[in-house]
Image (cartoon, rainbow, N blue to C red):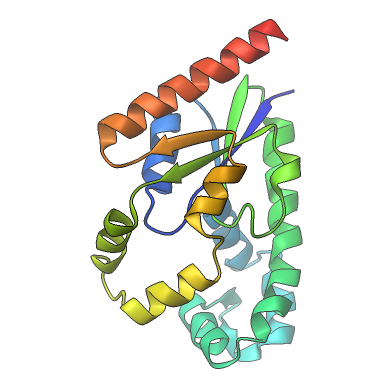
Length: 197
């Protein structure tokens, strides 16, 4: 049975970079966003239910993410219905990955881990964080990002301070070096715990 480490953090905190650091340490990483991409592709399990919910969001048998994003911003009430379709399918994908993993530790990269109430599924949760100023600088440097969209994303995410309070491990991503040190010490602590168990 693999040790299930949830990895989360608000937008711009450096979660994807940190996930790559775990991969570089030889840890298998499941990625919630990649799972959604698979579900939205032609033949994916989410295509048909999304087509029933929002027909214009499906073209050539696959979900058009840009069209879906536009629909959600025009009709925010659709978000809950979409989540009711997608979240259970993503959870199934995650469980399949965990069951197939024979690694000592497996990392699960989940942007909305606390927001979806899935923390109980993990053996421990690791939160990636940096200062609000650095977060803002990173996010607003992204192509096409506006302050308005950044504020909208933040409004749907649990505040960083609250995430840190709920975390078992914290990775500070102010620099690559601090993040790398925290990744290694997190793995050392977990392995020590597994050895002692």
